[in-house]
Length: 159
Image 1 (tube, rainbow, N blue to C red):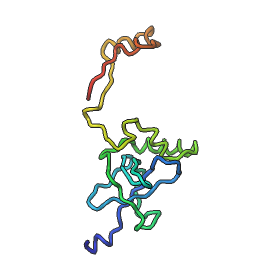
Image 2 (cartoon, rainbow, N blue to C red):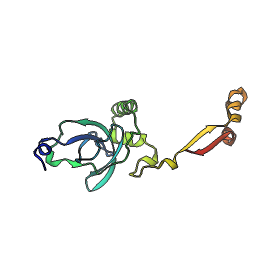
Image 3 (tube, rainbow, N blue to C red):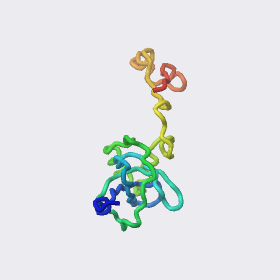
Image 4 (spheres, rainbow, N blue to C red):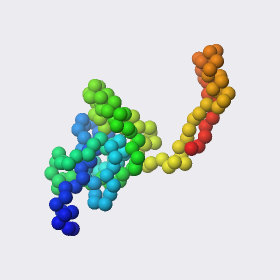
């Protein structure tokens, strides 16, 4: 290891982990690994298991000794799923309801994103109204339709 690499402090990432604790945890980014953007999911060691957390910030200094920092196992999302605006809203909700931020962020994610697997683009689905549905939506008598007839003019397509 060169002197420059040894003198350079590790990049610190603050991660909200879905556990009943109100604090965020600091993790180091390994040399050569990309720094995960705020709002992206990462797989991190927590206790005796690995868990999926959300990056909520970057820091110059860790809240624990550098020797005790654990490294991020994997960056699961190169592009963040949660925007900074949504993170700010969820942070407000966590503080307002006195609930741990990691659990609030986990609840905000769809079920498929709560685990370490990242859905492939082939699995993405889009729902849209067909022309008949747009026309029916504009008619006042169809605005309060319930049950299967409400979506009969919808189409499901793979992205």
